[in-house]
Length: 251
Image (cartoon, rainbow, N blue to C red; front, top):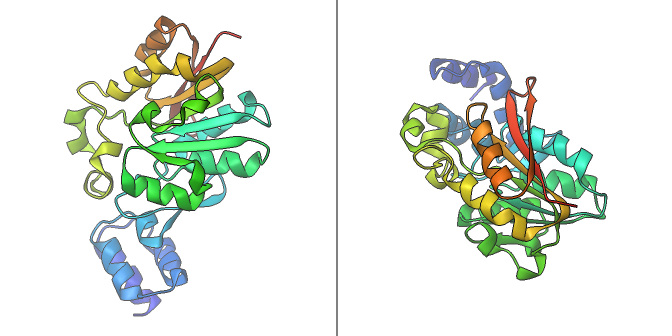
């Protein structure tokens, strides 16, 4: 296949940035026909390539695993301002562990852990982070008990799409990413309620919970955090179209 052949097939499949995607597929090596066919069939480009760019780093991505979104870079911005250099950092619902991987690279003094309930995500995360610090299990139950009360930063991108709205998501997400990485329950906040309720037992004094959310769910998340005894604020980054809850345990 030539570059022009790849571009033509991508354009016919509706890829808006066909030229850019063709260049990446050509640079990827391997079976160009197979890679192009996967992309034409609607698989996310990042899963086809095996990596996604996140905060200037290449993060390994695997089929069915949630692809890091640019809006999640807001959690990195907030973490940089709030976490001590040698902090104990945990990423829950980690997917590829993109947040943990970036913070571990930027802060080699930190002790960085990650966990996810999806075995495929955990296998992928172990390629991006120290595999001995990536755990399989349901939220906090996946973590070593030795981390209880020691987390200076807890970063979470739990699924927050309401169940009935998953059908409205782009096909790349709803057909190629694990349902467990998307479905937040009836109002999208099932996992948020659980994380916020349990976070105070795991955070160190003055520790931070950073939780990705949406503009219309943020007020409810802040209310949940306040009720859990955390000092809550909502942070918005218009350039990323991102919203997060930043909630702090008492010093």
